[in-house]
Amino acid sequence: MARELTKEEINQVLELIQTKRHAKRDKAILLLCLYAGLTMKEVVKLEICQVISTEGEISEQVELGSGHTTTGKQRIVYLNRKLRKALKDYLCERFNTDDLLPLLLTDTKRQLFTTQKSINRGFTANTLAGHLFELMEEAGIEQASSFSLRKSFAYMITAKVLSPRFIELIDNTEDRYSIARSIEANPATLKKVVELI
Image (cartoon, rainbow, N blue to C red; front, top):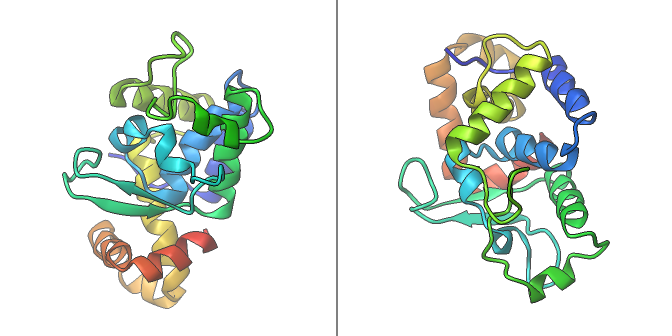
């Protein structure tokens, strides 16, 4: 059973990622799950055009169509400053540029994240989940999976809007998930909360 990650464990994984060949890519992927609550399916289906605005900046929000989500329902996710910076750093490194504006002149319908084996082909949900599992395992984190990242997102957003005493009262997964779903259903609240993470 997947569990949420502690701040220390998140830092352990981020420190390990910094030593890897694809550090910027892996950090951006990890933060998309942790700070935006994306699932593996949602991450691998992201296209470059979904995260870059027409001004050549990383967008503050990304619209996921019903074919992109695990639930089959359209939704909007918000990208906080840390996540936008990680995405920009990754794309600048991937395309060897300091500015994202030139990317708009290329095929932006390509997958956002590619694998080491092929720069033209992206991850599958299973290969990405396996990759993140290996990173967490190498960082010494036990009983964690890619779902732990989504679960951590739910815990972080509820912790930002609820008092510690209330969290103690509802400290079970189902209650936290229903509260997290309520927060996600209110775009204005979610946008503010995600920026606090």
